[in-house]
Image (cartoon, rainbow, N blue to C red):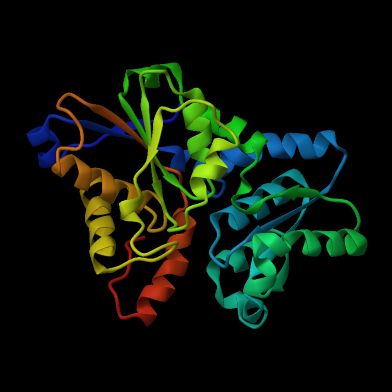
Amino acid sequence: MILNQKIDLPILNKKDVSLYIKREDLIHPLISGNKFRKLKYNLVQLKAQGKNQLVTFGGAYSNHIAATAYAGNLKGVKTLGIIRGEELQYIWKENPTLEKAASNGMQFRFVSREAYKAAHRHVLLEALREEIGDFYYLPEGGTNALAVRGCEEILTKDDSEFDIISCPVGTGGTIAGLINAASPQQMILGFPALKEDFLMEDICKFVENSNWKLCREYHFGGYAKVNHELVCFINEWSEKHALPLDPVYTGKMIFGLIDLIGKDYFKPKTKILAIHTGGLQGIHGMNQYLQKKNLPLLSI
């Protein structure tokens, strides 16, 4: 059973709010958090279809790319990642995420940002099928109906005591699973890591319940964008609670929750369960970026 770690902070005592973190990051050292959940049933389906190749999309520091490569290696499945940024073909060995994915057997195709756009992906996939034959396709971020099914298993019967279930939001699969699995009286709060507006539509493809809301004020400028304040918050949190946070997803969610608690967003006696979705592998790559920007580094 995954640990629900209770957090002790003065602001929580002052506002009479309880905060627990579900440590999904501890599921597996390399296939952690929601990536484990999303891959679970997709790998079962891949085998059921008699396929042995998996193709997916991802960015240079993608948790999905890293986890898919490792899972493929573990299950004896060939993996190919279509990576955003054709310039990376010359420097990918300097990228800790891609280097690790390659060590787990993943092959890469680096494409321009224009070709990578969702509207053009069918062209890439058709050309790839002609070249390498049939394969199992997993969308960027791993979100599809089977991924949502896996994410529904994050919540257990014991979690019904919580009033609020909170999670970071990337492609929407994790929050969709939580919405489907939650008790009727629970509210699901999502903290998007992106500025884009398509999330509502994407999430609604997989859910019927209306007990959810997106808190859009804590993306820090967009996907993988960070600043001095967020880095210091994550480092302080890690030191005080022995609980590492990634800067792209979970760190922003926790920052947002603490800010909302301080602003009396939640009623006294509210019990919050925040889902740690893993992603800690990305800290090494983020520190490369922070070093170039002369910003403080994240603790590892």
